[in-house]
Amino acid sequence: MTLTVNALTPNFVAEIYDVDLSKPVSAEDMSAIKQVFWKYGVLVFPEQKLSPQNHVDFAQQFGPIEMDRVLAAENTDPRLGHAFADISNLNREGKIWDKASRQRLYKEGNKLWHTDSSFKYKPGVCSLLYSTKVVPIGGHTEFADQRAAYDALPPGMKQKLDGLIAMHAIEYSRKRTGFATFEESEAQRLPPVPQLLVRTIPESGRKSLYIASHIGAIKGMEAAEAEALFQHLLAHVTQRQFVHTHRWRVNDLVMWDNRCTLHRGTDFDDMRFVRDMRRATVGDVANTCEQAGVAVPA
Ligand code: OGA
Ligand code: MN
Image 1: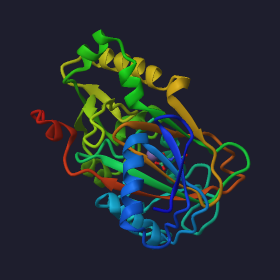
Image 2 (image 1 turned 90 degrees about the vertical axis):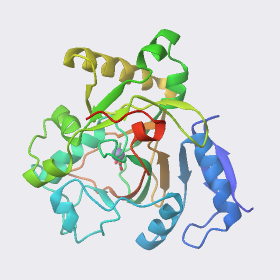
Image 3 (image 1 turned 45 degrees about the vertical axis):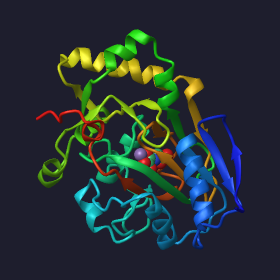
């Protein structure tokens, strides 16, 4: 094994050095990366020179890549293939987007604490985000550890959450930002889906909260009660001791476990500076209820 692991926190974030992801990774290194990933949840690979194909090849080691994009226009985006979410502030011509563009208003949602693709029936397992242009001020990505946050809940709250099922939709998180203009085809593709509020991560056996700003309802709860519980849990998970800030450098590849972390982008002057990143997301094999053997609500 050639790679080096540099833990940034005891159990949440680690940097990986001495591996070149633009070349095939040996089985031994791949297995080491996976072990470290399941333990920590967020990995940073600095100084990687990755073509889109290199990026996809590495991501695929973790499962099937999601190929459907939320916005209808991005399903025909000429800048990147369908394997990538465009995490930039550039339009299709490669220029800084317009202040009122749909793309920009939609991406405001990335500033809310969320986890990728919890609004899909089969949610996201992990995301791999690669930076080609970074900004001098702001534009960080913050991560929160939903496992450590679960562990720290009082026993009464753990009991209350046990078996609860939340409804997630992209429309719910976008409503929180005021973006309410989904096209008919987009809305039809993405109806609310059920997900367990507490899940067990198979590789580590650890229990984790599974909340996100995509939550809009909790089964068996009044709307006001559900929203108050969500806000209470979100405030808990995002306390400083559970949060790590990644300050981007060019050619960072950062990967996170969507099943047990939250993330959000921080503000930057997006009408002045270019920030260019692309993200591949690996989808899960089944809905969280199915994985836990819980009946999927209608
Ligand atoms: C993402 C995301 C936040 C950011 O790529 O999934 O939410 O900092 N990004 O751009
Ligand atoms: Mn995201």
